Image 1 (cartoon, one colour):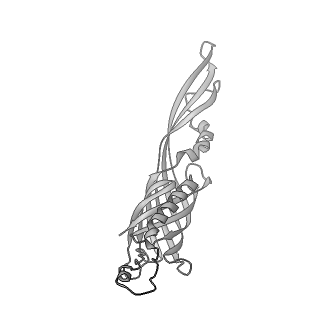
Image 2 (tube, one colour; image 1 turned 120 degrees about the vertical axis):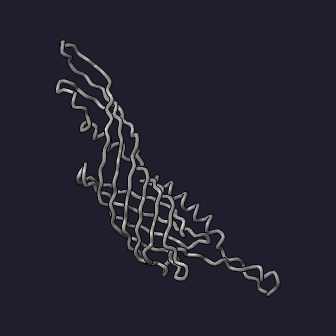
Image 3 (tube, one colour; image 1 turned 135 degrees about the vertical axis):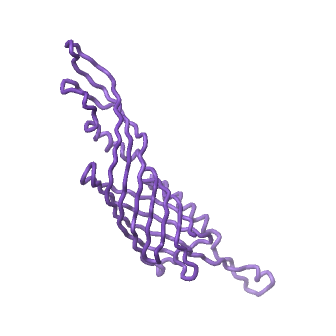
Length: 234
């Protein structure tokens, strides 16, 4: 999924940057030459004259989110993201957690087998604190950033299972059951990525990788997350 999102982002950046290509210079001055003017590249976030402190947009990946960024200055910023986790990437993890969510009504004489599960909802909120460095010596408008943050996740799951047992009369019994479970957890994240903001439009694009560690439900569980996105600066 990250590969597809990266391809989409590259296509978007290519379309936005197309208008900044330098026109061919005329060897002889003429009235037509005056019509050719080099478009001015705008780096809305990092421009020293017209510094934009806020940006809002969308991030694709894990998770998919609405992303809001506040630039305290050129080197420090805060990010708040609200969105939905890519549940398909956690299918194996939720399946392995099935037995810990079984209803208390099942007895030790019943044999329980997992059939399937469905993620009803999987929302998250994340707050990040970032530090940025300019990489203008490589590419004008390019920044490297690292940071730390906290992530809160709320997941609703529905499991279908098959159970076999002996009823009170000693008869063998086979039935299909369903159990719903709500799972809230939080943890810390470490972030690293790059951001580019030098288009003819007030946009910034970014690619980032996050390292999440669960601090509540499954202490010690760790996973890489991240994605690509675009924000509108104002």
